[in-house]
Every structure is written in C-alpha cells, then in structure tokens.
Image 1 (cartoon, rainbow, N blue to C red):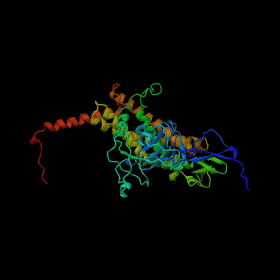
Image 2 (cartoon, rainbow, N blue to C red):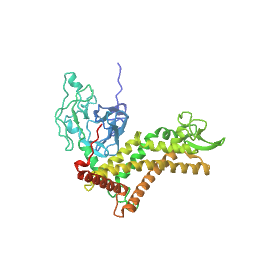
Image 3 (cartoon, rainbow, N blue to C red):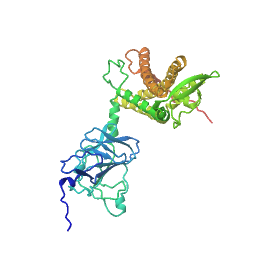
Image 4 (spheres, one colour):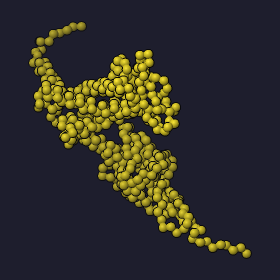
Length: 457
C-alpha cells in the first residue's frame, strides 16, 4: 500500500494574473512559488490614412498600455505617449479592465478620445483564455470590410461619440483582423487643420519676452519656423551627423574629430575617432572641394569651394526637408496676413517675396559665418574640431542670422519709411506695388478708344 505525502502550502504554487507584459505583480503571498499568468489582452488598432504626412501620438490619462510592435509597456496618466505617422498602423494592447481614456493627438491638438470600457460594456470573467474583442480606430477614406467579404458582418456596440468628433453612420472594419470587432470608429480631421490654422494666425503677436527680445521678432511663429529649420537641417544631414557619434570604436563611444594638414600646399581634412564600421568617414585625407567637406565644413580651404558651398546652401533651401521648412514659414506668414483685416493682397505678395529674399540671403550668410569660424579654429588656432559641433554651430548660427536679418529688415523699414513703419521692407514694397498698380489702372481707364493704334499681322 502506497502512502501519499500530504501537501503543505509551501509545496503548492500560487497563480497571479496580469494583463500586459511588464506589469508589476502585486498579491498577498500564500505559497512559496508564484505562477504569473498573462491573460488575453484587448487589441486597439489605429489606422490613419489621410495622406497628409502628419505625425500622431496616443497616450492614456488612466491605465498603462502596451506597444505591441516595440514590445514595451507605456505608462499611463499622461506620463508617456506613442508616436506614429499617417499611413502606418499602430497596434496597442490594453487590459480588459482598462481605466480611463485613450487620447489621439496631432501637433499637440486633441483629435479623438474614447474609453474602451464604454465602447465594450461586456463584463469579462477572470478566465485568462477569454480574449476581449478588439477596437479599431480608422481615420480616412472608407475601405471595404474584410468581414463583409466573408459574408460575416462585424459586431458593433452602441456608444456615444466624443463631442469633438464626427463619425459616419456606416461603420466598416478597415483592417484585416480575423476576429469579431466590437466597434470601428471612422471619420476625418476636419476640425484639426482649422485649429492649427487658427493657432498660426494668432502666433505672430508678442510672446512676452520683451526683456530678451525688445524688437518683438521672436514671435511664436518665428520660433516654430526656427524649430522647423533645425529639424530640416538635421534630417537632410542625418547621415553624417549620426556617423559623427561613433559608439563602436575600441575605446567605446567617441566623437569623430577633424584636423587640417597641408599637403603640397593644399588643405586636406583628416578624421579620427571612428570605427571600421563607419561608412561615412574613412582613412586618408579629403580635399576642401570634396562633397562631404563642402556640406560639413563649408569647403573651407579654397575660395571656390566656399563659393560652391554658399551656392549649395542657397539651393538647399528649396529642396528636401528644407523646402518643407520654407513652405511652413510661408504658411505662417499667410496665416498672419489673413488674421489682419487691414492688409490686402499687396501685403501678402510683398511678405512672401521678402521671405524668399531673406531666406536666400540668410543661407549665404550662414555659410560665410560658419566658414569663418571653422577657419579661425582649425587654421589659425590649429585645433581639431568635432564634426557634431559643426552641425550644432550651423544650427545656432542659422537662428542668430535669421534673427539678425529680421532685425535689419525692421531697421531699414524704419529708416526709409519712418518710425511708424513696423512692417519692415515688405510694408514699403507693398505700398510701392499698390501705388504702381493703381497708377496704371487709372491711366488705362482714362485712355480714350482712339488713343489705341491698330496693329495688323
């Protein structure tokens, strides 16, 4: 006869359920061994297909949620958010007892918010194998539901839409999920561009920094334009900016530095502090006319190279991400013009034209100043210079030059048009255009019919 040993509480294991990977386990311990069971989660899928290239963020004002693609837990209560771009599907996990709301934002503006618990009122038991139905949020053109293709309509729950969101009556699942869908939210962002446009219209006023900006140049729109310019420069030069921070050298993380040597009377750039995996900076010297040296160091070492760098700097303003930044600056100018009922079409035309001229002038001046700084440090002082410092210097000089150009524009406007002229040279140009058009209009209007001559071909 076999006797079975009596199990004690210490021999048993205690099961504790969590809803998301990375969650903390909290329980009253009643055994030596604790078995953590991951219950089935609820999928929340965002798919925005508006074709505007915007970036969106999702955050929670309540419980934590999980980023399925990056495999990390995102803190709730507004502590962190997840970013994704238009046209990219975002896959999130939330717990079955999620508390609070999920907030969809773009450019700091709230686009949509909803409570998963209110969209799906079904109560789920503690069975870890039971999976709550997913929630799909789709913004953009309607697409044919894969559920309808199978002849099986998606299950829909009754819920109230947020007050700032308009959803159509016909709902269809826009993503191919082989499961029952609790609800699909579709719509557009008609209100959001209006909010952004209104923000830009009111962004040309005083920012309150009168002690630091007595000339009232650094308005909110101007600061946004500088931020856009810095982002455009970083994106257009991302390859060598990233390569200048090398973390795979034998000594660990190092900054790539450049020194100048004279070889047969010619200037040569030599780099150090990079690993063998670095494909941007290689052994040997680079002449001042090399494309990489022209873009980074403004071609210092040869007058023709500096001139070519200035030409490329001006041309670079109207291509790539820099072009997007220029269009953004023009859009802010248009928004400010539309908000001022005292201005007409001549003011808009002169503002856009002066903006174009100032952008060209600023790009050339930035290249010249950076070239002078590099020449002083590397030629006259004989010191090495970090490559990443060149990028930071270019951005800083760009902001300073843009401020100086705006200040010069204002001072020239006051010197020519009097102290009452606060619009700079663009205001003078607008008045000149207005008078010229009016003069020619009235001249042609008074001209008699027989004053015209017939010309035969």
